[in-house]
Amino acid sequence: MLDTEGASAPLLDISGARATIRLNRPRHHNRLEAGDLGVLLELFDRIEADPTLRVLVLTGTGRTFSSGYDLGSVAERAVSANEQQSAGSAFEIVVDRLEDLGVPTICRLNGGVYGGSTDLALACDFRIGVDTSEMFMPAARLGLHYYKSGIRRYVSRLGVDNAKMLFLTAQKIAAPEMLRIGYLTAMVPTEALDEEVDRLAGILAGNAPRAMAGMKRAINEFARGKLDEAAADQRHRESMRGAEIKEGIKARAEKRPPKF
Image (cartoon, rainbow, N blue to C red; front, side):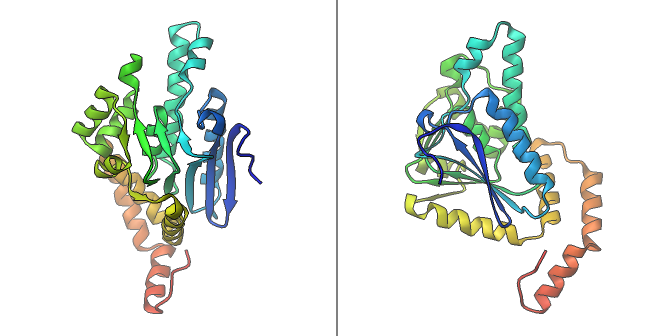
């Protein structure tokens, strides 16, 4: 049984084709600490290397998804500008790695999301949140210029005007507004959260993994304005003669779910 009062590095649970990473510092609203970053990278590598895992769900313990990265402890430990930059870069590496993960990802937003964790959630392919969720990006209040890939993610996924509103005003917004601007993929009552996450996870786990991974990569590259056209064309050609499309066509003809 999960210790909801304790604190630990992120936890991994595997159930069938689904992996779940749970941020687990509930007393501190699942604040991310420096030691958590390496753990997350190791878990991402483990998930991506396991061909039986088809979807990742990222969530938090308790009533908050995450209060963000512990900038206070970073500042206390830092003795030079270079160390501060390295700490910031380490978090950016983790978020970028999550965005580029080969398996589809769902952020199960069980509550509020703040600071750097707003970008962690945004790096997921889908974000399903409870209707009591809220978010804010306090960089402008802290005097922090956010790292470039985080700003790029906000702009490419939410649009220029919404990115400016969130970054420059540092105002808190509630779940309906998060849904309106596209931060949330879906908004549900608390009691319906698991059902909606399970529904989407089931859909993703049942689709062709190689095709999804390739299309996810192309979509992300399009969003960055850096599409590798040759690689995308190659994946398309390979898919036309691969095992996945053969199974997909056969399953359709036999009127059954495909088994990839």
